[in-house]
Length: 334
Image (tube, rainbow, N blue to C red; front, side, top):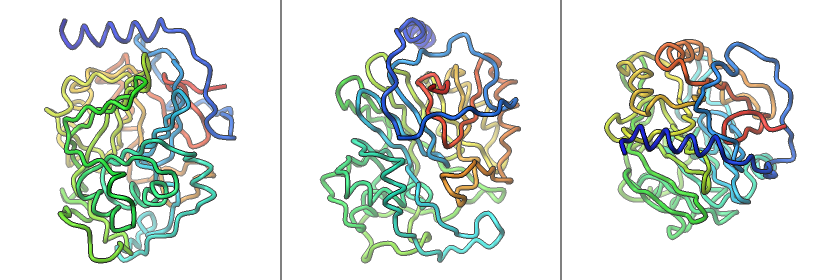
């Protein structure tokens, strides 16, 4: 069968699967949201069934995925701190804040697995604490490895990947590692590029001590029969590396510029026009995670939604918030 035939068959199986019982996620229950045109539009005919997976957006590009009593985190940046990024006073010498242990415990639980797209502060800052206090396995780049070792994480706890690996964690939980790219600003550049080939001499102290170190995306299959979730940490991608993935749900990072040529049309085509598209990395991640989502004014969220509707009219767009627990089809759990 062709890739498209495989994807169609898999989605039909997902649609016909029995709806599982929602797993306990956090002490918070989903709250009723005020409907808006951007929240959920175009009910795609191929939307996957709920299955037993529960998903919660952690802001920025972060997600918590619970399935079968197991927790997977992606880019968990929970202890937010001010860098001046959102008020015009960005300071690369901003000190990395100490982890808010209570907040992290509330939102992250006890993960078995932590996936890290790249090593900028808004993706990795809480990972050392989580790794050391929960024993979770961390999957990331060589740069992520060296930074975490400098922070005191056990090297044997970290799996270094490059892209192309398909990791089987048992029970139907698989992770496909995808070579990817970091997004660029209007000047076709980005903050703190570079890679590490050895741990730094001292633990990183400021956000400029955390270089990007190459970027990954991940496709997580959340349990046997569960949805395939494509997770991005930045708004660019390696087209040939992502070709043929065919996720059921694509977490798509919103760009801050048009530096990447035809980003949304190329991405949707490469991923086989996913049934569900979820915009991420469009929020002001220096506002409290317990509060309402504050949009980042530099991110064109409505523009991305419009492009998805034009390029993939059968896709359902879901704009997430911090307080809602979603099922595997990105419909709110009640």
